[in-house]
View 1 (tube, rainbow, N blue to C red):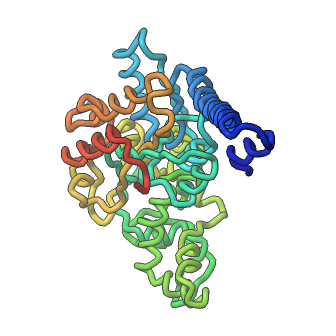
View 2: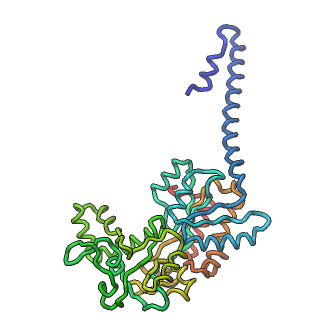
View 3: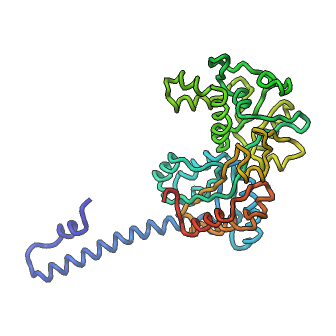
Length: 378
């Protein structure tokens, strides 16, 4: 692209008084500079106007985080009635929320993506390519992943290997990988009842699915010797062997649920033999409908997760567009309200709803990072 000075040089008349030529040159340079600055200002102004065309905070993502976001939005509206519009909270899953989040900036895009896992490097790249360069990570606390069946059915004491042998597409039998032959729980462990295997697990767009794969299927695959057999079958390709461990059977005994936990609960209620995979907070809010299994002898609870004893737990997050803060009305206030002691402190309302709180120093660091605009990767 030609520089401003080159453009000016093209229109300066040759010959004449030197001072006259210099004055003409300087006048044209200033006019060109003013025009360039005006264009930049219009671009910045158009984003602000475009963003301000929406007067509420737009949120989407994890079904695990959604109940806490719903709670905060409700309490936020009580405090800010008349000043800010009510936030709009939608589900859809962590991956779906982050995909929407990374589509760009402005009023036509969401401000916040709820996630039951950390954002991936590929998602950060997708965000950057769409012009979303300032992504702020907000950790809100912790949750456990539990296996729950109807309250009327026997209690189960699971280990990761049990779930892997029940759900994996290929399992080790007599030192060989075979198509999963198991149809009843007592075929896997004689201490289990003679009950048909059916488990409703999070669909692949859910953040819970990734934690389930890594901390349950992956561990179970290793514990049974399945990983070593997959490694051999995949020419010592560790990545391929790991992915093979995560493949679940497609014969109706492992059922993906792409909707909210309420859909999983409905499936469990309609099938007395069924197990559902839930966030602990959801299961604890439905004690009259489901009971949770132990894992490795540990009962999932606020205490066992906070102490790191229960093996299937994870942190929960939401992600904020830095460019939208202080542009979308009420966005800064929403984040600060979410991180308040009244919401996520040790005795906050979100804790009453099942969120496991962060240590005080960790929560203070999250608050500080948001206040100072610390972004992912910075």
